[in-house]
Length: 400
Image (cartoon, rainbow, N blue to C red; front, side):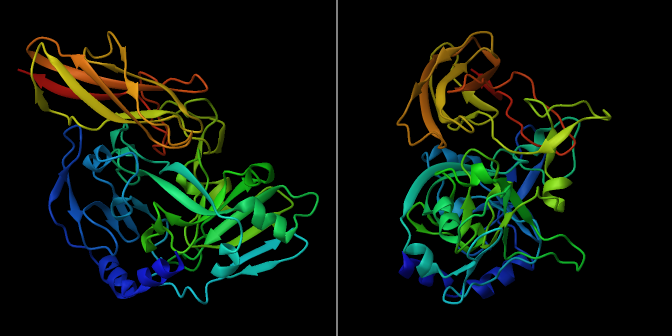
């Protein structure tokens, strides 16, 4: 793995700088729901064809057809989301250090070999942007107009955060652990991007510092050489190019915890447009979601016969218990067959055959139930940030 990471560095600095200065469009990619088309690009290092949301900082979306190829998202088409435009263009692996400091007995400065000497662990987990599917919100909200492709699933390998914290020795009275990476604000007064986890959460064995995904070094744009992996929680906590871990003895009041990434404090992060007095909390766990991946909106299918459907489902912060499909716009449902369970935080593939209705317009629906009994809602939530959409997906088709 060390050799792979050194190889990844070769030539990527210049390539990333070129891409960030203005990636060129390849072909257009239709936005589902008739909301126009977006450009695609192949201009970014270590990336194949991606939907281009923004080039400074890089925001690249995974085309939906990629999710039909397997339960794990290929590294070269794994989505990219950065907050500040000053992102690392190249990394000196030999000089890279991870600081562990704050309310600890022994501050640490760990090299990559130091970290790789700790016990290696692996976990399959979905990484999903808080604003995934924001482009479908009605009324529309500001921010990156993602389709459903601001997500990906990988096997992450690295070391337990708990092992690193134990090596530093957390002092009594610790409350939270704060994380930051090498990306920097483009303006002098911009707040550094930092996120925190409660101390008990940070010590859970599934929280890891990853140096590999899907058996390879992390791509530069996905956080090389280290990123935090917080299974079951939105990717705002999955800090890329992780360089600093600070144990806090008081609640974190930095901008990105106190003022940004806030959601209405209710089960579906729901509110009415213009509603005042809404109590908010930092975004956290993911709810269940599911997708049909082998049929696109507007597809033509044969009426009155059995059709094969397949797709992906996730339980959010727990496993997938059941996936159901409907060919009559939700009037009736039937169970799909679940494929191999790769772990409670992973995507799970599903497949089913279902009889199509008579000639005309129809809608195919899919919904997931997680192992906590939480079912995808039939109607979408709404909030001003466009976070946490997990409504039952509806795929319109034409039956002939």
